[in-house]
Length: 482
Image 1 (tube, one colour):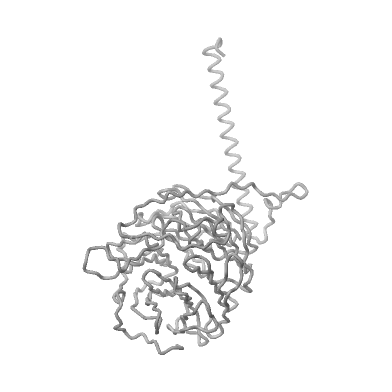
Image 2 (image 1 turned 90 degrees about the horizontal axis):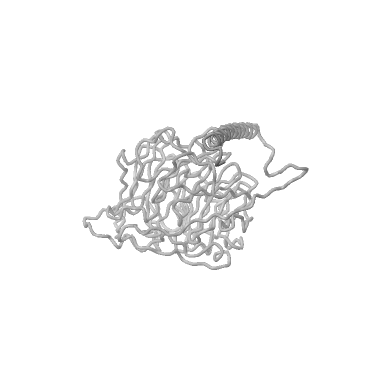
């Protein structure tokens, strides 16, 4: 139900340059086929995209893994394609670093957060060694988010109801946000990363000052049960998706400085799948995609009533498990592409790119639909942000396409291995298994380690014999010189 007038889905004739935006599915040869997409029911996208790579969480027996495919390498995937497979539990979330395009973070049921460096051109063999392994949560970690303007700050939310802030310049957690009383469902930053909005299973929507962990605003969502939250750029508004008291899917608009009551609530439909919101701050367009739906609805957000203006709907018969989004600098500006989804179709093992296009007759660059946008240069370092500095993103133009390479190099801190020795046993190295699966995994890991050590020993024995023979040959050939 709406609180400010009835917003029906009838077509509108309001002047908008995005009124005729349409979705275009990529040709089959530009899709990614044969992907063993995870069957995990966790409510995440399981897909992350940047201008170089597409990463997807995969189904795997024992431990967790994801694959990383170069964006240009579409088509059918080899069944033996290498994976990133260092986690001991299912991978629950993956996110690319917005400033280092070869750096990806992952979190898992094994309670760890890991940071990986993908080689240029993609993987050639399985990757098991992460650049950083971050341990701080006591239960599985369900969500990760990179800070939008700082180069080395990562947020992780665990099933221990805590959000940890990691400083990757030192490889340690530096802050803990401990105001939630249940599982955190989503996190979203405002443009400069000075505010963090969270939705939680305790039915509360919060706006938090992340450095202090102080809750600035809080809403008790009794009528609108919040699932996902997203900041609407610099509009000082939040948008949430959730469920009404009549179990219909809903969206709600909130003033970030007053969460006492939503500005607008709008019923969407009676389906049950979770609604994922995607907001494009450059075009002020909001996309709504339901988990298990085939369609994507899109709206325009305005500063005056009715605030949320329905535009159109992209329809497809194939249900989506999750959606990755291409950053702005990876879009085809010549085709007037303003957004691109990478849709996971589990039943077909398919990743399907969907381009949202503004129809234009002219072939020239369309400045009105491509304002200056957040680029790939960080505005500040991790230590600067932690000291209390906030800066807006460093903006870039898309006019000449995107060809300027990022000269930054990600440097992981060299960490000494921590030990906790009691009676000659390293407790951190010998954590007792808690379940039968963990016991089996530990057993197989030790078997693999024994096999590897035996092979190494055999190789060294052979090498020693070869060197002894070479030494004897030298003695026989020139006894006076040895």
